[in-house]
Length: 393
Image (tube, rainbow, N blue to C red; front, side, top):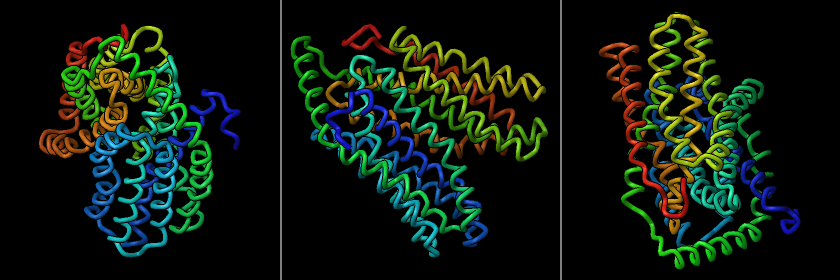
């Protein structure tokens, strides 16, 4: 592959494919759990431990890796991240010891942590002036990976047994090799962007706005709690309250993911045109009423429409939020990416057990009203978002 002949837009597409491959591998973990329970004899608590291994550590260390990426740009980390993620998933099917499987899944999560801060930073660099559009394309790759990953896992393992996890090595090796061969081109773009940012900041006197970034973090953390809560409890609500089949409840995860993928694609483009803060606030304003409307109807199809609009709105704000965080910290794009693409995910996971306790004690309808309250708080927090010094977002 001759990276010199590829325009920057094509480089962005390669990164989108890289994000797709990385997140597809990660998304296979929950789909593999039923097979591990049946074929490896692990219990539900142990299965939950594997989900912890997959996401929690990865999310927490991404800001640290982002700081490292800011100090010295290493575009080859994108290639390494995809490779490590795939190797970890492929190894699962060949291991019989629980802790060996735990280590393999943790390794895969570490690979994801390696990829995302550098990937988010490079997506900003490659995007040029169309930051929202470039970041949307990059995020859509990951979102689509989360849609495809469970299907790949179910198909391969059903057909070949747990050792079918080795199939992920085919796309993993191809995508990792492509990113590695383009590392010099990515490095040149990264160096040029760093010089441009340094000159721009020197001429304008703009500095990293840490207070604005901290206020912004409150908004994205609460959005993560709300989004994770919906992903967790909507399938259960469909079965227990709307009295649908378990298959229909599981299907809602895919429906929500598809709605989110489409809106992610649109969100960055709207932000480029109408402003990042404006799009974020409009999107967040939709979520609260949509949850309330869903809870007020017993019609399954109306409820589905409302929840699709809600999750779509949440994802509409996703890529603009990542770019806005980078605008607040122009000297620390990697750190901003690590927080907005990594640490933010752990917030939803941390609060999920608390929401679950509320559901156990007071019912699913109550917990969804609590999530609606979190959605309202998220919107109110977005009203405090400060205009970045670099533009009129």
